[in-house]
Length: 497
Ligand code: SF4
Image 1: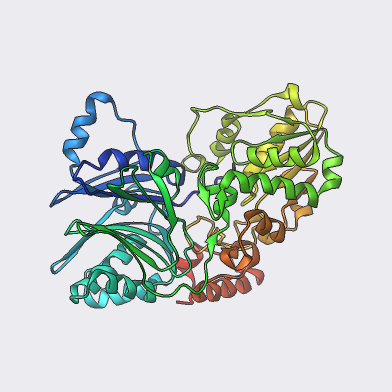
Image 2: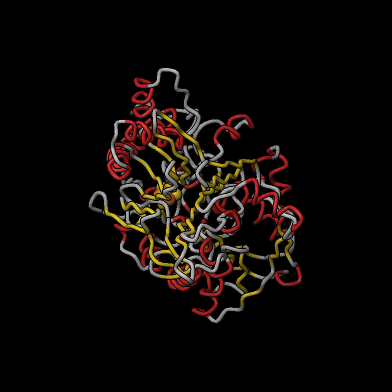
């Protein structure tokens, strides 16, 4: 994906029943998932007291000489961590620092640390509820809302499970949460539909449990994968051991479909298989749906890395040669979005090196995960042409994005989405390609191997799993089609609350 789409967040939490230090496990759990959030990161550990560390940017490398300092600074046998890209609250440096997770929240005798991956849709209602109780409350970001709601419930002398149940019942949105209580209890839970991934595993000796957004966070620590949390499931790891509880019956799953195409690492397990297996299947199904374009191609090339497994599937299905003609400059890691708009294009251009010798004079079938705004796909296509490609056929694994996301992916208006305004033929013209071949929704679902009603596909179907999101989307679409100019994230400016 070179379309400047920003990732969401990742979480990790673990408890050592032998009372060993958990900092190294959280550190590696976050490093393995840094692709899910680059803007900030943080760790909270607990050894009777809470210990916090927060910073902007990527999780840093730690020099051997500094390890003991880190262990001293973040002691404890239980802890949680987060890497974040913001989809709520401000994006200036001050707001980013304030919004860095885990968040510490206290009310009366209740105190906890909390971190999440997601986005709250009914945040106006929640803010008002909180303000009634705490007039001085000033909203910074969604995790604070969730945390405050939780401590407000705890402060009513409710137990943790009942307090979490209240949050599940009253908060609409996507939230995969990890937290720590002042008793050193690690807990985790998911929203109604399980929109964001969150899995659980254990160490080989069974003396540690961990939760992680992706299974790669477990793998890097040598932990075994146990299960993906169900929607509305609540787990705890405490002195009493590990416990799973279905707090509210799960009626429907709606796992974010975009995880399969773009966000999740190919070596993570999601649904019934590894993500790379799903991506290979995308390639095989693209071959079936667009055989005439494959027949008119001389070579397959992939945009690393999300297009690589797709290219393998396409190659296997068609026998067409796959050339690794596009290489990444591995250490050019600047994120386009932090630069000036004119610099964004140069940055994408700099990140990719195209081997002209492999594509000159050829008709190329290019595998790519998605097109969101289209501006940077245009840069990639122009570069392929500059290096001599005769024809450029794009094979896109994620179906055409026609609507915003309310659940934590930063595509939050209709106007910014090229697919909400244009059909594939028009998009091809705008970005300079000879064809844009999107995988169909049915082909996508078949590749994933789950039922359509087990996935969130809202941004490609316009059917949102949660009611308020649907209302806001319908309201804004009508306005947008009548020429209304959107002024911000749909869930922050909509009049439907
Ligand atoms: S709307 Fe799209 S990006 Fe957002 S959660 Fe659903 S599938 Fe994922």
